[in-house]
Image 1 (tube, one colour):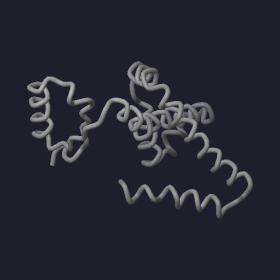
Image 2 (tube, helix red, strand yellow):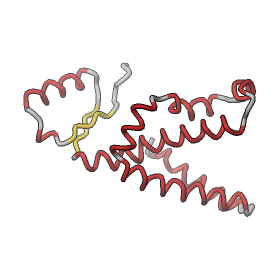
Image 3 (cartoon, helix red, strand yellow):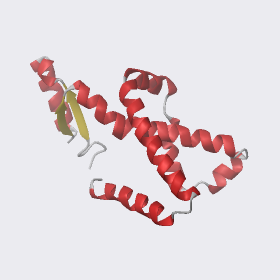
Image 4 (cartoon, helix red, strand yellow):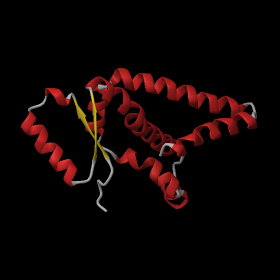
Length: 149
């Protein structure tokens, strides 16, 4: 199995593309066993804000938090497990590229950030107030992602 087997590739506004160029690109992605999705540019920008952009922002923010709070880099290295490493992996991404992406999709990114901050505040409140049932409920609700991914 290849690196791209079953991975999604998005064609935005395909009907506006040159048919021969589109055929060439489709053949290339088909050769890589990728799964084509078709949508307009607006829907693409909304969806990637939720499934891509917020993941990068979360990773950048987590890395910054740890770097601010944990001054001993050896502790970070020694104590960080696979979960932490996989969570901050995206924080190693290009600042130049992601600054441009956030700028070009700022309206959707801000909307996603607002929702994400609300969810973080839900956790903060429940933990601060020792509302363990509410914490458990939030985690169980989040676990529904297992059915999708």
